[in-house]
Length: 354
Image 1 (cartoon, rainbow, N blue to C red):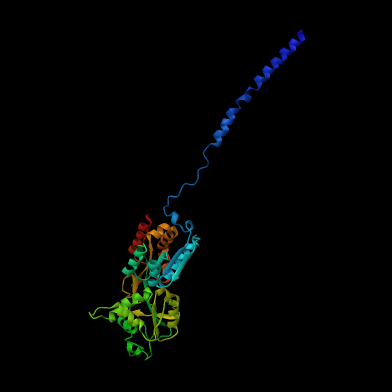
Image 2 (image 1 turned 180 degrees about the horizontal axis):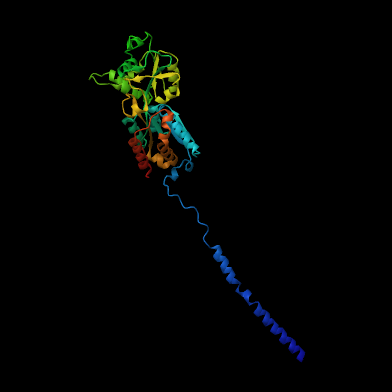
């Protein structure tokens, strides 16, 4: 091999070694790869912490599904108001509020098992509790307010402003049939009687509080059954489960008289006049202090199993109890005593396991 060739080979080898040495940093690329992996595996941005509010799951916008309520025509406007507000706050399911009377409402809840909530203007009867038990339901009672039953005449009536309970009982048991029998100064005109029907809790309450004390049994005690028969047997009396029908009937004659929940008087007070009973007017002060003789509690009923299986029902009842006092006066009723409302909330807590 010539000297020139050997020199060229030496130069080429040296250059190869030099180039290899110069390219060495490229061999350390895995270090950069490890950095990328570390960046990829770094914790993501923290998500919002779960809320600490245990009631969040019962917010109107957190539940859906159907809710069916039925019962008292007296409780109807209050439950209707609460249902509307519940939807305004984000509930997107369907909610039905039917006005069919307390008795019919308990039948639908305790016998047919078709409703989730029973609205009632009286406490549930033992027979209705037994009917509920037969289909596996145990009614939970929630006091939602107080009604001052309004005894009303037409705004055209210019002769009566006050009645005693006894006078009222004699009118609705048929003992008095003309106004002059009530008071000699009143017109000798036939009294036109308007009353809720026998499926109504208002009817039940009125019979017990007003009519039964004048319909005594053989032992001389007030007899509710005899009271019901007396009222239902009144010649010419008009009965309806729809309080608006009663309003129209009473306002149509100066000689008519009727009774229903105070809310319906408030809605129609331009056409009607509410009578004082025993000299006491139906108002907040006299309802609260117990002097108005025809005040009564208002309720809704449900069941723990229903509220567990249907969170939307539990949510609606919680919303109802939490907001009812802000709305009940506008509807035309009076707030329940604070301890009664707290007992209702305690019943809800027990029923939902919260």
